[in-house]
Length: 523
Image (cartoon, rainbow, N blue to C red):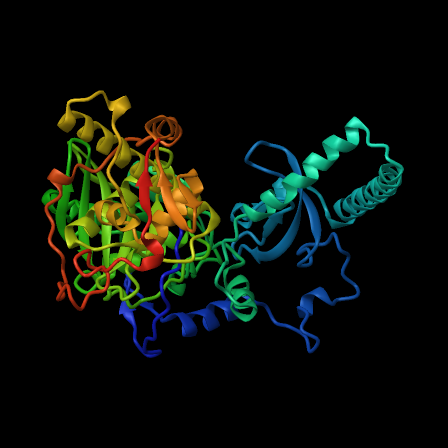
């Protein structure tokens, strides 16, 4: 699982620089964006078009192809032939051959990539004509479909509703739901910010990254130092050190770096705050390990399109999840959180590395963030707004935890009373009680109970309706999946402590609002 949350934008000095892992200077975002954009954008004419695209004597099939041209390329993913748009092009200084950065039609832009001339099946003149013909055919079919729909509407008005029309009506009813679930990975950006974001990040500058024993294809652009791209606009492979997250252009440089490293230091910097039979978590302070945290953000940006990469990592703590074996520690994902959040956020950004996804590590990191909140004796929530995919992940986690808690309460009540669990009735239970036992903020408890159908409005007040059969049925649908954090193995204390009377997120200072005085009723 990959879930992305917007890190808060922070002001930082435009003149500050730091040393990167290859010895160059890393410039801050505004200056670096301007310089990289200038590098990526060739000379333009007065009307805003590229000057070399305006040559009247140049045939459209002559290299380099114009930006915006449609070509057909054999996609390496499954070997199929696909139409794509030319976004950028680059010439190899040694061989003189051209490469093109393309966007495949009907694909997410994380699939954009550089292709060489042998992969191009049809040039712009042929592919463009075929695409135009296909588009015209689709428009004709759409027009015929609209005419058929009008005839159907006329028949409906006459009281005739065929089985096919009923089926179509059901499909139309499902459309708003699909639209509602559409993933908006740029939520929170206004039009100007979105335009700037797309302009600067339109060309992916690293094709693969190698971390440990895995080589991963990247999804998005990341603003690495311009010194890395002295030989061209993009790198085929960038090599990362698992322990320090330093990055290198050549594998020999990585091997030389590792040969100088003490084997005892081959783990993330910071304190190891959790370890079980397979997993460990290291807490890394952004104020003490700036280079590591900044390099980690560079890496994460390759897989998070909407992440705001900034260089002021001091206010954040990074929790790096690792698999450990006889050879050391291997990072598999991380999440960051503010050292103190006035809004009560316990997680800012989260990522499970692609080579370790579908192993439950994203859910494990979410679980860990709430275990920290329990240690702090606070209520917590991830930074809002959540993306649609993030909401699905969190809602599944919230549901499984609340249902497991209710099942445990039934079992404990049955054991205490000595009666069969089927005959147990829970005592009155409020939303605030559930919040304090889980460290979920009350808003997340209410939304999850509503989602599960446990919240009812009866006689002017809300009731939590949680009979055991319903809880067990829902628990089978939303089980607690491994791996699970063992709280007994967590050795950690809050970095910042406040007077509970002044901290509005402390569970000891929470006064239950009248509108949240919901009581449980069992059937």
